[in-house]
Length: 298
Image (tube, rainbow, N blue to C red; front, side, top):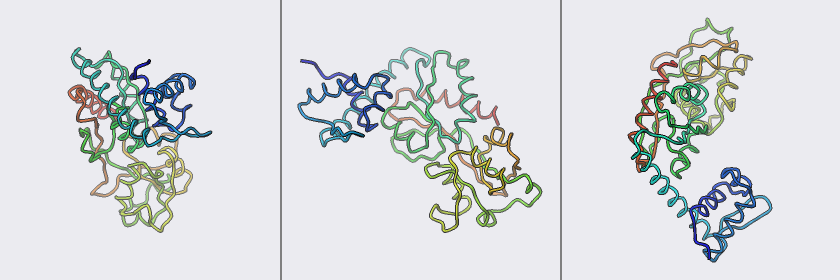
């Protein structure tokens, strides 16, 4: 009779999280038949079905939902035991599962990854770009070690470590370069291009302009800062972008960049990780490298 193993739990948790055997197999880097065998073995061990199988997606049974919650807790605890061993061996080595929000990743990650080998030669970064809500979910479930996000997050289970402040700048068509810089009241009347819902930078821009997503005025959306800047270049409207994005996003666009009147909008970029992580001291060192890298990039 087989015994329950961590492999059973990891593969089942992946199916529960992805809702699809194929996607779960990809996430675990194994074949779908091999993953299915492990899940069926787990069901045999507990003596009841955990998953309702359909042609497209899978649904958890009541027992499956409870089992998934327990599995995540067990896997988090195992990861923390592994982290304890990594801490005991001196300098941090091995993989670093690092989440980064999309309005930071393209501008900071390349520099950061190039800088890491000099400071942390045994560390292998595994970056993941996603919106804040997904990064926090992955952190809490133990699928990420730490993440670079805009603060505050206000999640009691996480440590928030502020890194640096960053201003927003106004991007306008090049033909408007000599026009007065609009204040928030004027900006509210202009055609404002924003990131689509789910991006924290969108919410910050709306807050500065004292607008809401349900505002009756039309708000045009894009999936990335690059798209927004190119739309401005085409004369469609104006947008706000974080200062670190300016060198990359404006070098091939016919736009002008202006600082907004005081009090200028800004955000706080920081790192977050679980309070229970035994790698807090190491993450603090990595956070300092992130801060230094961003300062050099400014």
